[in-house]
Image (cartoon, rainbow, N blue to C red):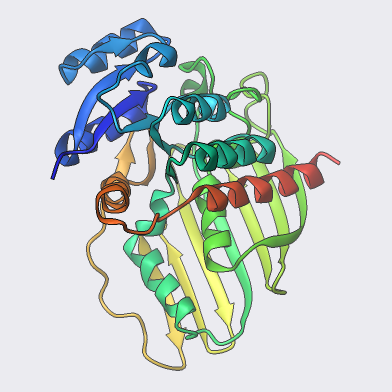
Length: 335
């Protein structure tokens, strides 16, 4: 069976994670970035052609998939261009910065008969997978409420060393860049959100970012479940917690740690969750860490879908739902 051939659009930190897994599981055929130094560095590291525009990269014929790792605000543009060029697309989170762009990405994939994958690697965290299995099996009975806590640190250097992070146009907001994976899990576990009420504020990043660094959110899901989201990037010096707690008729569980990587509490009427398989470490980005590194599972799923007819772990519609929920939160917060 031939290896999946992938081209990378964007050569930032997350693209380096992609490149390693592509080399191991498929074939990296080319990379591009508007920053010539970044493109050249990654291209030479993997001994592949490098370009300074997506347009140039998409002229390559010997390619199956374009992996979009560009700034958030360019995801839609690059995804649509790649689909129209005849390639399947793996798009990093967030899918886009508004639902209209997400819908256009989905329509383009359908029109071009190409597959659109969205990166949501936290779904593969062992503790999260185990809790989802419990939900699907009905072990909680009626679910009453869910609480999401996202307490991370993003210091001035994180934003000042980037030409796009912290901007509304290309970053979008804290929920898009830092915590969209967490919002995705709310949808994946509980369902769609009917109402959102939110308060947001920028306490510690004045003149550094163009949006909030802290938020408090209440949610009502369409199935009647109530939820809360408390988030900040002001945890002192380092990431503190990323956790989800579910309260149900027949069970309560908390998945915590810094990256939803630990089963911290459980109590069920029936059988409890047993020993978890070992998870991947968090993504390392020099001065800070990100979510648990499950991009290997993302690429394994992509290969399973394209070569064996498997099911997409996170499709375009699910990526759209995350964006819609974030839009509801920001609409409430901004009046």
